[in-house]
Image 1 (tube, one colour):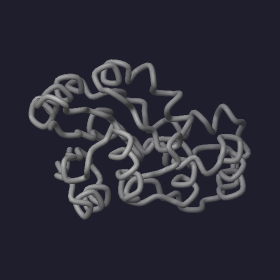
Image 2 (image 1 turned 30 degrees about the horizontal axis):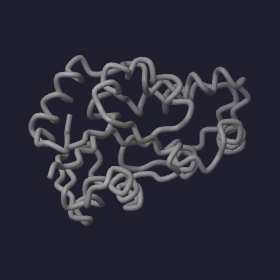
Image 3 (image 1 turned 120 degrees about the horizontal axis):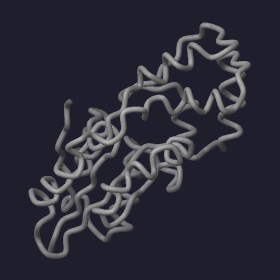
Length: 195
């Protein structure tokens, strides 16, 4: 029997920069100076809720305006939110995906999927740029669609159930310490990427 390889997108295959979004948001009209916590290991609740699909894009913009005082139009808010994605796929993304597949999912019956904590706006912004790696995997799981977000163990268990693999037959490749710890507790093999 093969294995399930779950690969994270941002920070593993896609070059993300949380600082770009924080900076862009702080430059939006009306910003009230409230600290914006948005990073790989820790995020304000509104960002988590939006990634998990708990709130719509319209509700997200409205909440941002209430929390941070933004008076900017929707397009400007969306652009600031998506600044994290400006760099695109790592130049080595396809080669890295092929290397990981060869190393962890080469046996017959293996499957390779992507599991990304991602909001609707982020997905719409980067989907076409991600096509080279999306085309190489069996399935792409998006947190806002499956309504589960890493490091919640249920996010990993959901993917395992959908793919028909036990956690003990699963390898996670991720850049978040919290995600790696959660997967490890479920019995997954973990490859912690640190760039």
